[in-house]
Image 1 (tube, rainbow, N blue to C red):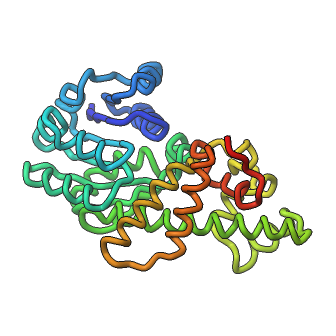
Image 2: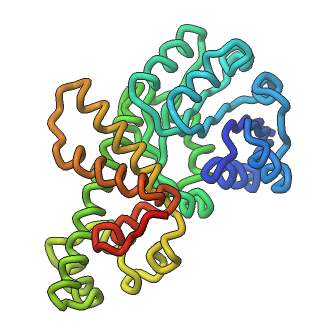
Image 3: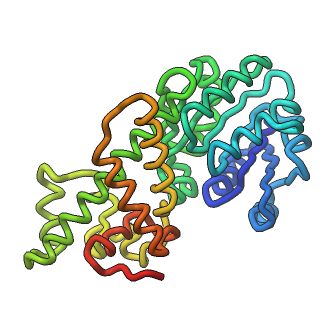
Length: 299
């Protein structure tokens, strides 16, 4: 049986690991947070006490961690993944991090003889639970071919973005678009309300017109038009505003490094920073509609 070490068993990692276990893989888990470990144990995942004993027998190591520093620590620190993984293991980082860290870890893994992919995901917690994630993969094609049977158990699309780091580049660019689009949809609905245009009428028109986008038709920030959207469950995430802020900041940092001009991204980043500062970082990112419409109070 193929052994998969899964490091990072939070809101995204745990359902991903559970889907791998349901597919018949021998999943060994690790997380530094006691609450995450308890949930994973309750789900039947075998836990390692440290990174070393979690990865030692694995053919695949998958990480789903909060940010670049945690990824660097997990892979590069003494006692980390690269010090303890078996020869021939394939390393797959599904975290959303900065491109530079992704490439740094790739290069160190390669220097030690390991194949590695950066494979951040789109789809949120619902996609992780339903195994419908989209994987944006950077790395060598041969490594991707090895990983596809595993990734396919957690998602419905596995797309090669290019060489090392381009998976992270794709995720940053995708969420830059998403953050901007969501704010534009929120502004339009807030304006429509002031103009006396019913939300369901604007939805019916815009979803069949040039304003159509995913933030409108699949994730409408106004209660009613899209029953499955977080707006119909009190903006419970989903994908939190703090996570959107993190990704928009990554986009701004990347833009600054390469001299790209992203004024709408910069404004979106500031708006999500304000929304989070008001105490709403844990709500779904579509909940920013309430701030834009003047309905969000400081928590």
